[in-house]
Length: 378
Image 1: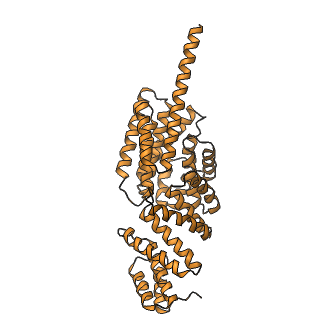
Image 2: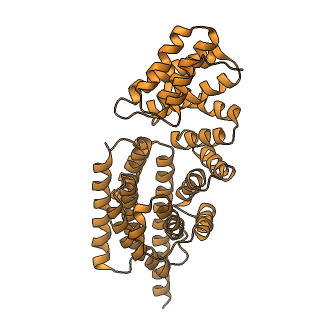
Image 3: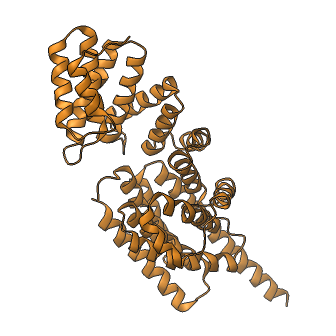
C-alpha cells in the first residue's frame, strides 16, 4: 500500500512540475509577444510545441504572434492569410484533442480563443456575418470551459468581451443589430467589471484584458482618465510596444496634456529612428504631427515647421493608397505658419493643395477661408 502511495506521489509531483514548466514558458512567450520581440516569441512557442506537442497553447500563441503583426499595421491585410492559417492549425489541434476527450478544458478554452480571434479579425475587416458566426460558436465554448473549471480566471475574459461589445457594437454599427437576435443580451457594465477582474487576476489573459479596457475607454466610453490608467500600466510593463505608446500619446492629447504627449511622441520618433520593431512610418507620422501641433501652440514656429515638414514628407508616403486627415491638416498648419512669417505665396500653395485632397472635418472650409483672408494667430 505504501508503495502505491509513493508511486502516486511521484507521478503527481512529475505532472505538477511539468505543468509549472509549461506555465513558465507560456508566460515568458506571452511577455515576448507584447514586448514585440517576435523572433524570441517564435522560438519560445516552437519549443513549447516540441516539448508539449499535445498541449494546444503552442499553436494558439504562435497565431498570437501574427495577430500582433496585424495590429501593428492594421490598415494592411498583408498578414491576414497567415493569421487565418495559424488559427486553423490551432483549431484543428483542439478538435483532435476533443475527439479523444470532449471535456479537455485546455482544448475547449483555446478553441474558443481561436474562434474569438478569427472573429476579431473579421470584425476589423467588417466581415460582420463571419465575425458573428465565430462569435456564436465561441460563446458556448467559453461557457463550457468555465463550467468545467470555474477557477480559470482567463475564461472570464471571454465573458467580459462579449458582455461589453454585445451591447456597444450594435449601437455603433447598426448593420450588426439584426445579427444579434440570435445572441444573449449584452451588459457593458458587467463586461467592464469582468475585464477588470481578469486584468488584476488573470494568468495568461491579464494583458489582453488591460488592452481591451484601454481601447474601449478611449474609443467607446470617451473616458480618457480611465483609458490613461490602463495605458500607463501597459506601457510600464511593455515600454517598447508602439501600439501601447501611441495610445498613451493620443490619450494625453485628448486630455489636453500636450506636454506629456510630446514627451511620449518624441520617444516614439527616437525609437523609429533607432529601428525598433513595430515603429512604422505610420506611427512616426502621427508622432511628428502631434509634436508639431504642440510647438505651434507654444508659438515655437521654427520647431513646429520642422516637424510639420517631416510629417508632410512621411504622409505622402503613408497615404499613397488611402488619404487620411494627417496630410490635409499638416498642409493647413504649414500654410498658417507661412502666413505668420509673411510668406503668402507659400501659404497659398499649401491651402490650394488642401482643396485637392479629400475633405476631413472642415479642411476645405478652412483652406477657402485662408485663401481669401491670410491666417492670423491673433
